Image: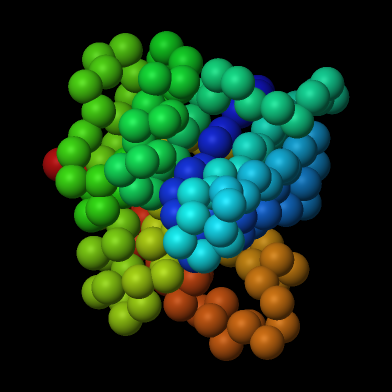
Length: 179
């Protein structure tokens, strides 16, 4: 098993946390992992993406050129990364913000209203966790509990009161059914 993942969106959407959380969960599940963040010119409000590779065997390079999974949280990220997802891959689109879907027919597409769902939980910033939950429901990369457990290690202690909300968001994403 190997998944090459790109998470992309605006700074402030928790793009780095998405990569860090799934990386830690994979590592604690005995997988080989790389995580490489990439910030735009600005941290909050600028573009950001992180690359994660999860594998059952050694990983030669942390660079993701043709992701098997792409998660795009805004329209500029959809424009930039939609064409890069490899044939047969998965593209998760935050349809609350992109306003449009993918035109590709050679990949699995999951349009999820992550920001709207996060609003329903009382915090827009939980959209990233909703997307992570949706990935784990669509692809059997890791047990969802491993992701939930990782939050204690990747979220700063001062923000630990947010862990229950993030766990609920992961659960909502995992249970999301677009039909």
